[in-house]
Image 1: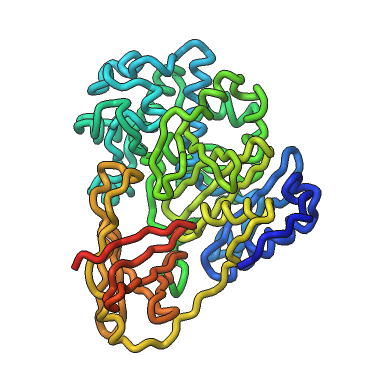
Image 2: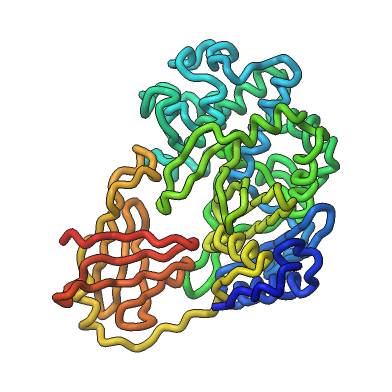
Length: 462
């Protein structure tokens, strides 16, 4: 644990650029993460017009020993959504669209299109089923699909709820927005973004990723087995579309971030709409949080934050803005297990002199396998408003075999865990910790999953 700075370090809190020890502290933190095996990627931290840090860590390509740099191109995953939302708002500025209109205005053949507004799709309150949660999604990941084919796969399914009633994150909705952009503009989604966002800002290292394109400085995506890195599963980039198919660099994201204080791409009315807290979303911590158009809005370190994370095979991304202080943090990783959201939170903590955990490589201890038997069973996460209706119950199953202990979360693969103590365990394939807790009778009552800076309690049910 790194302790917070004392009260005399007021300059650090008032203006991070005044404390030149900060970049070194951030670098030490990031290098420690590299050494754990849980991170490789590129990171940028800025304060206004000045960069505190812009640097690559680990390898962009392990086979050819090519290091990550600030110019390395990473798949963005859901950070793509803010660009899709911006394209919609740009069309509104061009008087070609009104976000308060029903999508039937622009896509007359879309089922239930009269009930759903563009606004509701932008803030995930439309009730459109999330196609990446469908049981057959993994089987289709290698198949190139036209946008109309992909939309047809979910548009005929019943809505999850009456549009406008609640928040439920839906990649499907942003595919519909992609179709609206193409229909109204008579351009491809990619061409529209290039013309109205990337080219005006000089974002020459950003675009729509396709596996067949020769893309200099492209990062390869990796997963971890716990013992070694492997190439991530292939996904045809026609599938993520306007929900997650863009690539960029930390330095291009910085250009985009600076533009959000100006009229370079969007006028003030559009920017205000994008960052408005349009729908309150429940969280595990019960802290106030909202969704705008392609952005989450909440409070972190007692400061107003606008952010979004992304994840796509082999990549994890995090982009946070603290607009009152004009602080930006960008973490782009080509390793699927990288805890980028926690890293972003810790980097912000460093900026303001707050305590944070310095990552360290975990080591398993020898433990009597008989102890494993006491933990065997099923553990249930109590119903949470922070989970969409499609998720259902989350069950954590603990089993043993051949004097080893394994866990499985609903819908995920079986994962071996390793003891750090008689009650604390960790998986090697992800940065997480599992703590088993006993009651007054010495019986296991629940387990706590510590991951991404959050604690999730699962009560034992058998």
